[in-house]
Image (tube, rainbow, N blue to C red; front, side, top):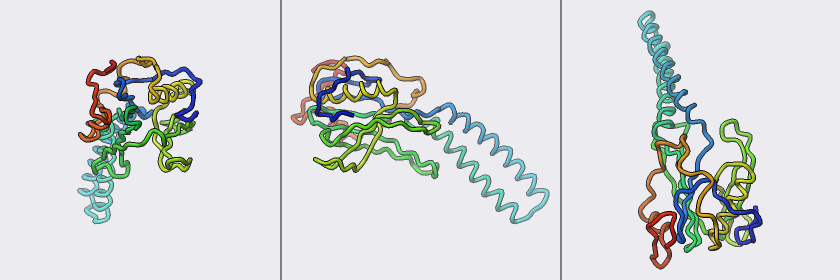
Length: 240
């Protein structure tokens, strides 16, 4: 993608928008996951668990063998863990993981919800990070992944003044044209140039509801929504 300080030749346009004013802007970020599959997996794993549990009781009652008991306990634990993971993913995991851009501070802030698929019993933490906009480079990729495939816009965080990538995070998914327009929008907004006030899509997608992202940490909330001199804008989608 063009460098964020270069002229943008593609008309700017957002795909989704949460909040925008002259100090900061927040765009939603999502994963291309079929969440209905999580609910189906949860129900299916629960039915299998019940069937396996009844079968276990029958086998233990029929033949009280230590190996059968140990195998049954291990199988029950695996199925319970699988059921917990599916239910936790569908009912509790945040789907909206927003990205904020503060053009007064020249920083970009990311909100990530990390899922540990291998350990559904642990707390799935939220990670909030801040990067200098000057160190961000846009990359468009194509993924052939079965569930999250398609074109994706990534931000590559490089060491200052170099192209040595130290970290990457996804900004959005969409068609190549949409992602080019989105990158153009972010670059122009951060330079203070005119950009459209509305996004192509309004509201929130149905598959994001009802869970929004967790709250930003208080210090990060204050920093990401104010200018270095303390100036702030409390009215979303309007100029201050």
